[in-house]
Image 1 (cartoon, rainbow, N blue to C red):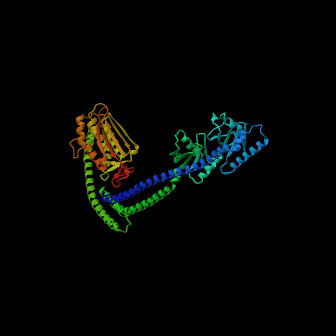
Image 2 (cartoon, rainbow, N blue to C red):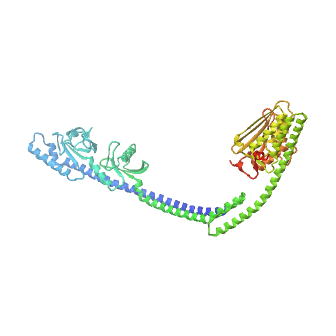
Image 3 (cartoon, rainbow, N blue to C red):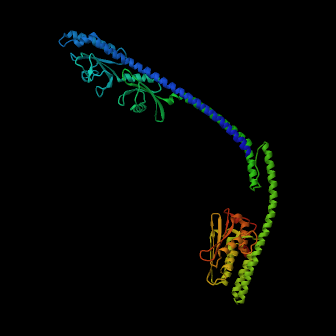
Amino acid sequence: MKFRGNLFKKLNLGLALVFFIIVVVYGIAHQRTTTILQDEIRRSSLQKLMLLTEELDSKVRQMTDFQLTLLTDSTVKRFASISMEALNYDRIENRRSIQDKLAYKENTFAQWKSSYGIYSVLNQEMIALDSKIFQESLFHHELTARWVLRRNEPSADRRFYRFTLDGIIRERAASLHATTIVGASFPESNIRETLDRAMEHNRGNTILYHSRDEWIEGSREGSSINELIVNNLQGRELEHTFQYVFKANGQQYLVTGVESDSLNWYMVDSTLLDDAMKPLSVVNGLFYGVLVVLFLLTISMSYTVYRHVLAPLKTLMRGLKSIQSGQYAVQIQTDRNDEFNFVFDRFNEMSRDMRELIENILMEQLRAKDAYLKQLQAQINPHFLYNCLGFIINMIEMKQDQAAITMAHNLSDYYRYMTRTDITEVMLKDEVAVVSSYLDIQRMRFSRLQVEIDIAESLHSLIVPRLIIQPVVENAIVHGISSLIRPARILIRGGRSGQLVWVEVEDNGKGLSHEQLAALLHAVTAADNPQIGYGLWNVRQRLLYRYAEGADITIRQAELQGLIVRLEWMVLDQNEQYRHPHNRGSAEEGESER
C-alpha cells in the first residue's frame, strides 16, 4: 500500500515526533526545576534546623549562666562557708534566701522546666527544691562538666544534668580544693515539647540525636522512620552540619543535621522529599494529563483519516488481491455514500464480468478434461479384457469348465462395473471388491498365490477414481510373480495419516535391478505416454487430475524380494467423499441393473 505507507505512516510519525519533542523539552525543564526546588528544600531545611538548634542552645546557655551566677553569689558562698557550729538562725535564713532564688529561676519559664541544686562540700549539705531530682550521691560520684542524659531511678523520667564547681572535676568527683558544687537539670520532656512545636510547622520528623541508645523524638508518630534514620546515622562521621538523602521503604528522605554547641547533641530533621515535591508532582501530573488528552485527540483524528480514506482503499486492495489469487466471485459490500461507493460499484461489475468469462473458459477445459479421462479409462479396459479372455481360453482348453464359468461370471461382474462410463468415481470399498474378484480369478490360475488385504475400515467410504488399484495389482501379478515357481504373495495395505491417504501393493516377485527401477520411475512420471509402465503411468495421471499436486506414485524395492508400489493423495476435508455427486457411483447401482 504505497499510499498508506507514504501518507498515513508519515502523518503518524510526524505526530509522534512532535509529542516526543514536547516530552523531551518538558522533561529537561522538569529536571531543572526539580533540582532547583530540591536545593531550596535543602537550604530551607538547614536554615530552620539551625534556628531550632539556636533556640535550644539559648535556653541551655541560660541555665549554664545561672549556674555560674549561683557559684559566685554571696549567699551561696556564705552557705558553703558556714560551719556546722554556726547559729541555726543564720543557716535557716541563708537556706531560705537560696531557695527563693532557685524557686524564682525554676518558675520563670513555664515552657522550659529546670531544676537546680547546691551542695556545700565543707558542710556536706545540699539545697534543692526537689530532692528526687538532686540526690547527694550525684554530688559525690556523678559530677560532669557537660550535659549528660541519665535516669536516677528505673521508674523515673530521663533528665539532663550538668555540674559547675569552684574547682575541677576528676573522675566524676570534686577536687580537694572545691567548696561549692552547683547542679543544673532539665527533663527530657523539654526537648520533646521543643521538637513538637518545631514539627507543627514542618513536614518532616525532628529528633535530638547523640548515639544509638541516646536519642529523643517528639510525641508525633514517626518512630519507625526515626529508627531507620538513627540506624543509618551509626558509623557516619558527622560534621557540625550535614545533609544527605536516605532511601527507606521505597521513599527518599532528606536528612539534615546541626550540632548543638551547648549539649554536643545533633538536631536531626528528616523530610520526605515526595511530600516536599508534591506541588511539582501536581503540575507534572496536570501536564501529562493534558498530553494524554491531546494524544487521544490525535489518535481520534488519525483514526478518522484512516476510516474514511485508508480503510476503503484497504478494502479495495483486498478485493484486488482476491481476484489475483483466483477468487473471481468476490464482491465488495458497502453502505457508503461517498466517492468510494462509485469505485466499489465499478469493481463489482468488473468482478462479475471477469467471473463469467473465466467460467466459460473453465467449462470448456472441464469438458476437454472429462473426454481425456474417459479416453484413459478406455485404454485400460482392453488391456484387462485381453488378459481375462486369454485365461478363459486356457481354462477351456484345460477342460476346467467350472473355472471358466466362474471366470466368466467374475468377468461379467467386472465389466458391468467398468462399462458404467457415466461413473468416474466410486467408493474405495467398491474398488477393493473389484480387486478381490480379480485376485480370485488369478488364484484360479495360480494355486500358489496368497492374497492379504488390510485397508482401514474408515477409508471404505472414501470417493476415489475407478480402477486405480486393479492395474497396480495386475502389474504385480503379470510382471512380478507370473513366472515364479515358488509360492507367490500379494499384500494390499491402506491407511491415513492426517490428510494423507495411502494404498500400497506389495509382491514377492522377481523385482527389478536398480537400473530397471530407475527407468520405470522415469517412465511413470513422464509427461507423455511412455514405452514401459503404461498402466502405472495411467493411474498416476488420473490421480493427478483428481487430486492435483497432492497425489503421486512411488515405487521401491521390498525388504526381501519384489516391489512395493505406493499410491498416495491428499484429502483436504472430512467431507471429501461427498464431492462431485453428479459423477460418482457404487457397485450396488450396477447390481440393481442386473
